[in-house]
Length: 104
Image (cartoon, rainbow, N blue to C red; front, side):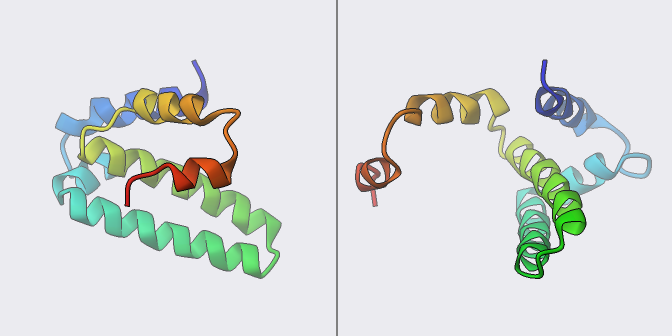
């Protein structure tokens, strides 16, 4: 089990936890829209760190992005395994060809 699998399992387990004792439960209790908003905020922070060439901060922000992505997925009942299966399906396909094959 990878650390992402472990984190996704922890997030899933926190769905029913007390929002006063768990940050994950607190985010999830605010609904999928708030989870998506928080993911976006963290993504912007990662972008800023990348633009500034701040490797240390980018590493920390990237970890935040991954965590908040998993929370956002959990809020919409999308399993990490589904995302990984989609990545596996795309493996070996040109990014240009894959994008051209997507529905609008």
